[in-house]
Length: 290
Image (cartoon, rainbow, N blue to C red):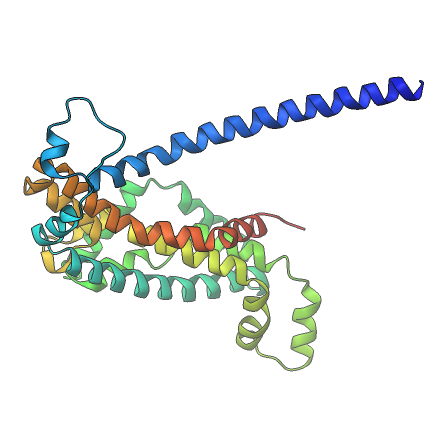
């Protein structure tokens, strides 16, 4: 093959590669617009005045007179500030307890040898196959019998353990060379010290990922808080949105309803944007063996 033919072939290959790349980025851009459009529409609706929104027979994709009055209306219609406080307390305590339980359970299954370990872990994983509705019913009966309805313990206790998070962290712990554990035991290091000083720092990305995912899960919790609480003093932000609708305010004043949704969604959006790389790296690290 002559140099001219070779160069011509390289040009065609480069051209084809460029066309495929442009097509790929075009599809990704289109998909991003589809995914982000609901968020744009939510924010746009929240800054439209009540009269402007109701006068639009054909929805407009922009507004020339944005207003923040809807945000004030949303906070005055229901006790959103109180619900934010409840959600913060629920999220912090639940996440802290879940991390402690997850780290200890994952360490036991990954590093310790005890009779029936494999069978116990297999039975433990089988819990993931139980429908969530059955677990909710069981938890509701248990919490009610313990007289913990309309209380923070009743909200928190059923959410402090997760089979998936324990499995994820166990797989991550098992990637750490066993030689480190043996060397630590030779030096007289206790299991707890080895866990806190060696394993947790090495597996920090996965631990951070679990924390972030649990925070998101707690912030978005709806079914269990809705079921176990009927006292507004223990409502979470998700219950606040439902309260807006049930009082009729949210159905009548859609812009104010969207303003409340924006305020509630903003912390999670910021959390994901700040820690998105750690979330992805932690999931990939925990799901890869060897």
